[in-house]
Image 1 (tube, rainbow, N blue to C red):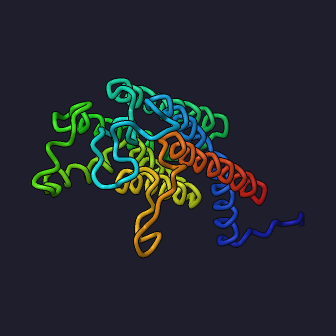
Image 2: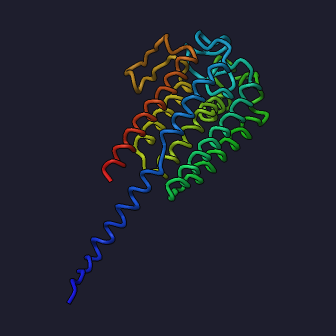
Image 3: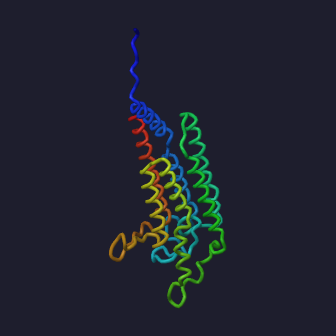
Length: 259
């Protein structure tokens, strides 16, 4: 009689199949590229500001409180609100589409894909919603946030609008999109970077350029003059994405090597 092959244990077969699938998913993922792309876009948005490396004229950069400048550029001090609006309207979707094309080619080459379409669709949807909200009359370019000083105190309506403006920025939309990508790719590095990116943006737009809130620097908070300039804050945000991109690439390479 010839040699007979012993059938493998079903558990071992399933484990082997799962290892192959896991390795394929690891190879097709590439969060490092979206982080790199939006890091470059964030850095490029510095050109939107009238005084990117200095105190933004006409804005409350030192004193905190509700900003009186629109947020089309993400931070106070835009050179032209219309130019900033169309910059993000055009460049951000192009960034998503470039990443989509790269993911698609990568999936075709490796013969496996993951749900990157959901990230692209959610990201484009976020920017469409943001642009629609910013185009509403309440956010007229160059207009002060109502008459927010009334009888020596900030009106409730203006305070509410100023608070909402801290979230209605392209930078926050980028952060939310990256959170979706982190969930799809199961990438904790992207999640941490997205939270830091969005958190810094909201803090800057809520408390003022260069201000460190009291819940971070107790008991009264403090300030850093270096970060009063919009460019310095944008460079910090871009650096977060670049570091996250490098760490994600290293993590993916090591994960692939272990498979």
